[in-house]
Length: 164
Figure 1 (cartoon, rainbow, N blue to C red):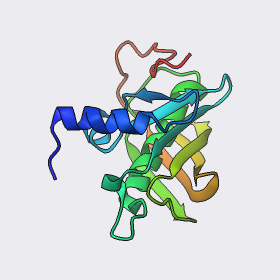
Figure 2 (figure 1 turned 90 degrees about the vertical axis):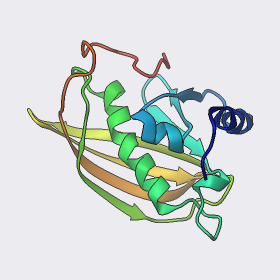
Figure 3 (figure 1 turned 60 degrees about the vertical axis):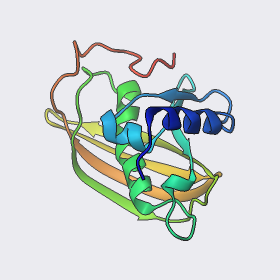
């Protein structure tokens, strides 16, 4: 199915009515993630929380969030958290390795939310892990290794998602 820009705006408007307090729609990850979003984020002052509401277009034939959508979300989670958790230049973080343990379903309409921690950075890599829940119940455990890629902009953005 192909969506027009207006249809995406309508979808985002409908979903925005069901987003938890404090979360804001954010632009992250380029055109592919924008097409599969919208994604939302909230800065608590200590942690970055990222989430989305499962829509019909995110589901498999059983009306559960498709594993590919959950994997895409997990792939964005650790790099987004790193922008707020690690004191380093803002960089593109291409995925080297991503491990996902699917622990539970995320049905149509569920609020999917993730939080993560950066475990270590080296000269060339970033290591992290996270937990993703669906309506508060564990849905995914994720860990990943990301290459410290090219600097984005001047590398100095301290609030790249505009949440503070």
